[in-house]
Amino acid sequence: MTFKIKKSTFFLGLGIFLLWIEESLYHNIVTLSEWILPIMVLVGIFLLKEQIKNQKQKKCSISSSLTLSDLNQVISDAKEIINCIVEEDPSQNISNLKIQLQILENNPHLSSFSIGIVGKNNTGKTSLKKLLNQEKYADILEKDIFTSINLDVDVIIFLVNKDLTHSEWEKIKLLHQSYYPCLIVFNKQDQYNNEDRQVILEKIQQQVQSIIHPNNVTRINSAPEKIKNRQYNFDGSIREWIEEDPPNIMSLVHRIKIIEGQNKQQLFLAKNWRTATNIRQQAKIISNQIRYNKAIPIITKYELVAATIVSVNPISSLDFLATAAINTQMIIDLSNIYKQEFTFSQGKVAAITIGKIIVQLGIAELSIHAISSLLKSNMITYILGSLSQGISVAYLTHIVGLSLTEYFQEQGDMVVSCSKIDVTKFSQIINKIFTRTQQGESLQIFVKQTSSKIFTVPTMI
Image (cartoon, rainbow, N blue to C red; front, top):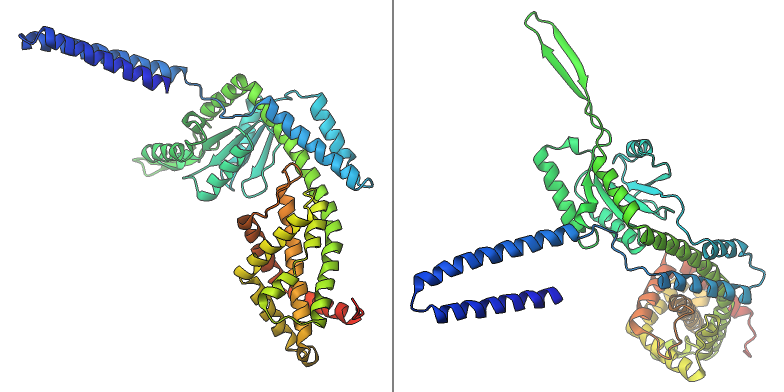
């Protein structure tokens, strides 16, 4: 913005200056022309020099907004989750996570420079690794693009041998989000003519320019194809020989050296941030499993309570059936497990909101129809219409309970408890859970198990 203001001021001053000249020399147009031309030339030269100067000063460095406070925050989050695990399940063995975190805190330094090479099959990963080994880069890992990329490296070399595909671009964006500095390398360029090589390179540079500097997109030839030559002599003999160009990766080596030399602080922060994030993620998985194991018996209990009550006292309205499936106390109990800690009034509001969601999405109606269809195969259970309602309400309770566990998981411990359910977010989750429970034999198994439970529960409940 400062540059634009200065530039505007410059041209405003220039305009005033020219007006003054015109006012002073209005009687002599020829003289005015002689003044304007040299001034315009001088201005053009000045602006050109400034542009060249700015381009030279512009660093082609890693684009990263990471700070030390960002790293410390992730470490703090990981500690808090680990402490929760110890509190909620002391028997859980997480000594490995504690050791990893301790090492990260006590030894926050950059280890030997390491490189990761990723790309699809036949992009030249192995041949490039051998050539980089010759350039004294020993710590190199290879990985296919379609596997989970979570490499403990400082720099990623992303190999392509043609235009960048959508799947490759999505992977590059994921790597960028994890603060991996990426070098996009167009390999096997000897398969194209000179004009096509340049077109492909420029196209890739344009595709990734929002997150990767054009200078970090380069082309190499790690394993040139052998060319078979044949010469026909005048005496009728034929001479054949194989011609092979030497590999050329110097442009890539140059970029690696620049990143290694100019961005040590960012490399340090990014690598340690990824390590801390990985520890936090592992701890979160364990924490979620512990809480899920506690949540399932609670959900099962309220499924049975709702099913038994409705079986004894049938409900005619779909809205009332949906409401019966959502127990306020179940919401409160689950929120406590996930440290959201809803009050009774908050749980009541949440129950009403969820009831409206499952009716509006058609989940209540679809569930009843699906379960009724399954029960038609058994005439005895089909005759008992109240049983159909009981199982339906239990199924809705089941879906709501599972959706709440996933919803609270995504909220996380660090999110301040909110009295309102996010309608959009919860709708997406419950739709996903409903679809999942309809697949395979999940629904049939649920109906069978719930039916047997209802018949064995005393009617006084």
